[in-house]
Structure formats: structure tokens, C-alpha cells
Length: 615
Image (cartoon, helix red, strand yellow):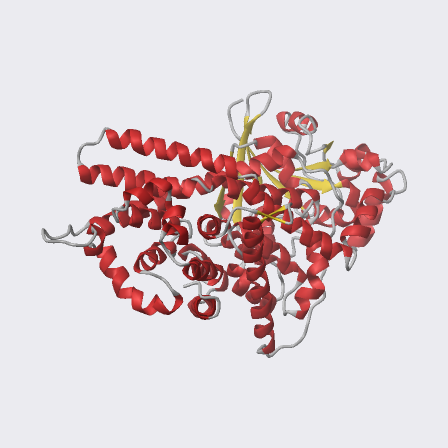
């Protein structure tokens, strides 16, 4: 049978649906947006034992088909068959966490009422057995009139029952008639399905005493975040050195075989230098994502949101803002999109407004370059890496600033009413390493595609602007001073002089608006074309450091602070426009972020020069 089977995974958040999706599809998946909306569309493909191909759609998690957010609206429209692009589903696979059956049965009954071909997937059966629960899947199947399969999505062989059912196209239209009270139907299904008392999860209870404690919980969260940022620097070092060495070797080999000076400059300085200067930071980005995914897989993130709700409430945010803001550490775009789970429009807009203050992974290359140039690589108290401490401080500066900005917004808000946090806390679970590795792989490929796409193109464009027009015959300065980029940098420099930026930095700020990482590539290109070969041989960090007679320490600190506050890439601003439907909101965000960046950089530079004599 060669025709493709089309199925969609439906379920509550934290039901293990994404783990199931990853087990089925592996890396054969792609993420895009539904037409006309910003909700992600995740699709994968795999083959059944019979050889039949399956296309599986991972729908956004939903508690009900009575949608209260754009994510739930997409799930509702696909289930009801009203979304034209996804109307042809052969079956709906309803994934249920059997350890939280009462909550998840509500969505199941809503899907049953649609009278569409379906298959019920009872997930996390291993956890249910560990707690001493006994689930009668056969009784549930007979009651609803549809097939029911048991799975353990975090185990490689845990989806075999599902594969067998898919191979047989074991889909049926439910025969069960939902009662007028949904609550009565849930009690009826629980009565025939659960044949033993639900045991308390002792592991979750014990860990929550620590992680949800008002003092120990906050302390453990701070320690956890501190360890993550230390690891970003400490673990990535050897891999970064290897990548840097490789690109240096590649530039020498290829450059030696190109005789034309302009072409050699384009390839070595523009393409290899630009792309290599960004790829070198891939290990740090992957390590950061690795830790975030572990926290998400383990069930810790919702607890961190619950723990910080009181603090965030005082600052004018909801505890639900924690996960979108944490996502913004990876990239502000999915973080802003994740605010769709916040039902209060005011809280949602405030979260969107401060999301760019979270230090996204695109800033890591800039931070790493400047920290390597100006912060000594030494240990503090014999155990802490000083560079890691500075990185942690930069992240904390963004977090504290976000709380201050949200508090100011709260003061000017007319509607002073507040909304309680409603949040499901899933059981703790051991992270599935396959999910972790797939997640890290996906984010690594996204980063490399940016290098191969926008950064590659901008590196070539920047090389052109830094190379042409050629200097006159009687030129006394480096060629780049006579180029378009040099002219623009010198024109901008007086405005940025009060914060210590030279004209080379001014040039790098322009392409950095397209993508933060390009700032490093831009600086590399600018200095490579400036003619200081001895400094180039030591690397960009050595060239700009105060020891290398480059920038002053005050300038380096001011630039670090600039990137804490300056607006994210243009794609982030475009996402704000799509999510809020207002160019006015984009303008407000851009102006306040640029204003903060300039003001804070001004204070840091002037204090460093006038008080500490670091100019």
C-alpha cells in the first residue's frame, strides 16, 4: 500500500505528545507557520513496518476545543476539519497522560463528540505502573467504541503498539454519546478505566518540597541558572578553539590558491572570515539549548513559573510569563510567540515588551568576543570562572531590567485588576535523551542556516561596502577609510562618541540589526580590511583588547551594555507586529530599547572614564 496515511496528534500540554512525535519521526520533521498566523506547524514523516508512509502533524497543546488562545484555535480548527490546509486527516490520535486522567479526559470527550475517526493513545503507562495504578484500556475501548493503545513515548520500543495499530488503520468513529454534563461522563469513564486507587507520586512530592520552597526554591533556581552560564563558557572552550583553528586553516589554504587580490579578499575576509567568526560560537549556543531542553523535559519549568509568580506579579507580570521569557533566552521570536498562552491582553503585551531584554543566543557571540577581549581568564575563589561570572551578570542585568520596565508599565496601566495564576504542574520525569538530542540538533541547524543564509549574504554585502570605492592613488589612510562603510562609520561616530564607540563599531551596529551575530562578522571584516596583519594573526579579540592597543576597557564595557538593551533583529520586530497587529507597538519597543541602550552605555562609559580612569 503506497498511499500516505495522514494523522494528527491531539492532547493537553505535558501529555508527552511531543516525545511521541519525536519517537515516531526522529529528525524527519520540519517546523513552519500556519498560513496567515504565527502559530507553529510541526510536521514529520515516517514509514510503517508494511512500508506505508505516514505524515503526522503535532498540534499545539490544548486543554479544550473551546479555544482561549491562537494555539488552541488552530487545534480546534484542525480537529473540526474547518482549516482547509489540514482538513484531510485520516484520523486524530488523542494522546492522554494516564497519570492525570481526570484532567485529560475533558479534551478527549470533546474530540469524541466530533464523531471523526480516531485512536486513543494512553501514554506514560510506565509511570502509572510505578505508582501502582491499574488502567483497563480494553474497558475504555469498549465504552467509547474506538481502539485504545498503550505507549511509553520516552522509550524506543514504547510506541510499537501504536505502530501496529497505524499499520492496520485501526481507526473508528466513536459510538459513545457524551452526557449533557461533561463531568458525569468523566466520572463514568474513570469508573470503568481505573481499577485501583491512584497512588501519590512520592518522588514529585519530595522534590516539590525543595523546588517549591519559598527560600530553598529560589536559591536552587539561582544556583541552577548560575551553573548553566558557567558551563556555557567552561565546556565550550575546546570546541571553539578547534572551530577557530579549522577556519583559520581553511582561509590560508583557499587564500593561497587565489591570485586575484580582490577575489582573495572576498573569499577569505568576507565569506570565510565572516561565517567562521559566527560558527565558532555554535558550541556555546548548543550548550545553552541543551540545558533549557533538560529543564523543560524534566517538568521543572512550570514549577519555576509558579515559584516566580509572586515576584513577577509585583513587577506587573504573570507567572505564565516565565516560560515565554525563558524561551527568549534562546530566541526572542519563539518567546514572543509563546505569550499566546497568556490570556490577559495586558500581561501578554507587557511580556512581549520586555522579552527582548532577555539575553538571546544571538547575543552570545558578541558577549563571548568582548568578554574574551576585556575580561581576564582567571578563577575567582578557586572555583568560579571570572568570564562566566561576567556572562551571568549580563544575563541578570537583562532580567532585572525586564522587571523594572514591567513595573513602570504597571504604574501607568489604567486597569489595576489582577488575575490568579492557573498552572498544571506535571510530574517530574527523567529527560528523554532522544528528545534532547533532536531538540539540540534542530536548533543547531537553525543557527547554521542563518549563517548560510542571512549572515553569508550580509558578510558579502559588508565586504563590498568596506572595499569600494577603492582609495585614491595618494591615499595615506587604510583603504577602508575611503569606502562606503568607512564614510558611513565616520558620519555616525560623533553621535556615538559620548558612549565611547569608534567608527568601526558604528559600522558593525548597522548589520547587527538584521541579526545580532553579524556584529562579530562585521567587526572581523572591518578589521581584516584595515591592514593590521600582526593583530589579525592574533585574532579579533586580541586586536580590540586594551592590551592590544585597541579599544579602551571603558569602550568594551559600554558595548557589552549596549547589547544588553539594544533592540533585537528585524525579524523580532516583525514578529511583534504580527503578534500585536500594531506598528505603534513596534515603534514604542524600538524607541524605548534604543533609548535604554544609549543611556545605560553612556552611564557605564562616563563612569568608567571619569571615576575609574579606564578610558
